[in-house]
Image 1 (tube, rainbow, N blue to C red):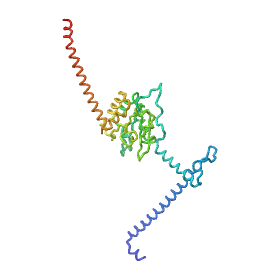
Image 2: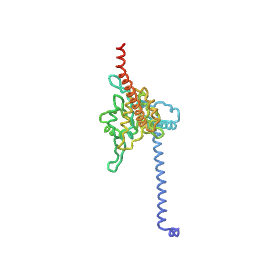
Image 3: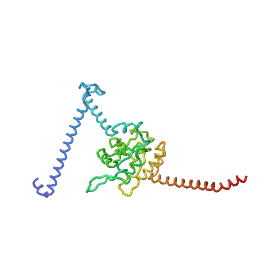
Image 4: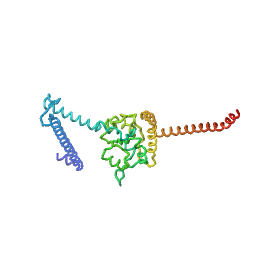
Length: 313
């Protein structure tokens, strides 16, 4: 043995010792984690698996009371875990918004639901400032244009409330945004925070959601206007075009906004398609005006002759 170790170079001996130490450390770490996990699981089963009690502290019967005590504990604990999991995945409440306002208060006829990040602001990181949220060009104009009386404006974001709240306070000093909904109001599905518009407590024929992430509106695609995500460029004018689009929908008294949104969802750039349609409409209007003007001019020219003919008779 001593001969062998004498033949092994010192560096190899050190490496061998280091490897053995690492293996032992990993083994003991796994044992410690296993013991800790087993202990935690055992504690939760004992704590969450207890038989329920009434207000006076007396034990009450439940659907697991007929089982052996150890089995009932496991089933009750499993039920608690399932309930907790459901609570995390589902929106924090069934009705995300209060009932629409009634007389003498004014309820705008349409509800505009906006994602915050990528639509109104862009997260920006530098060594000097750390994380900051950059305002999209035209935000102030946009909110002023789409706020009441045309739209009830709701922020519905997958951001956490503690992150988004101060940003929105800075973004909307005039208070055009009526309600704010955060990540806890989303439904967690397949790794995505999904906005469930059916929980809004509003008529979906009057709800428009503006977002860039198609996974966010997978439950209500007919209500969504999908825009490209804003990446922070200063020459962006999307919000001006969006304001014109939304005001056109609202002032046209559209009965069901989903028909309009489904049409524009066929285009890669719905606002570009809208601008093109507006241009065609304007050309048509000008052409009609010219036809009408020409008809009036002919009528004016013919009038003296007809009057003279009438007088001659």
